[in-house]
Image (cartoon, rainbow, N blue to C red; front, side, top):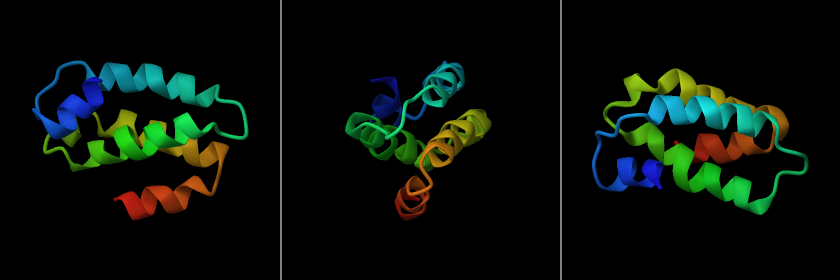
Length: 84
């Protein structure tokens, strides 16, 4: 997984912003209630991306993805806040 590699191995990965743009559209189409695997992806991939030193390269796209989760299920806001 590109996101996990960026977080745990190497800070420099090209294409994260583009992948997050596509992912934002996918998240927007998630059905409710959110599936467990979708919640795990938020916890294990998207929230850790906030800790990368090069976050300024993809912050807008990451913010959009995370906000889509919160719009889908307001309970996810607590998960996001605690994860940061």
